[in-house]
Image (cartoon, rainbow, N blue to C red; front, side):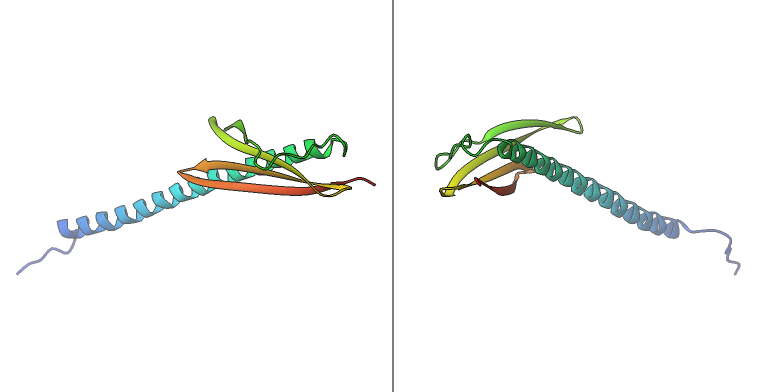
Length: 129
């Protein structure tokens, strides 16, 4: 009986294709996850920049011009263009006066991504001297 050993059988070829497809799908999923995490970091970076800008505007004011806010101040919607996509950030600024010669400023930026809510908050104390 003569058996040719010079080529692949159809079954071996199909098994090789299935293994190749599983590897390629895994690689594509890794790229998809990496792009999603990258966009999430870009959104967070934009929120940090927005909060920092708002805090610098508050800190540039004089002590007397910083008015304390009510218990639940309304959040301000701030649209930002990120990679050609408009994202809405919600900015809330709270000024409280813990002592007679100091005021605490808290800026909270929140945003949504894939039905999840994220927040970034910074605070600073402004005092008279």
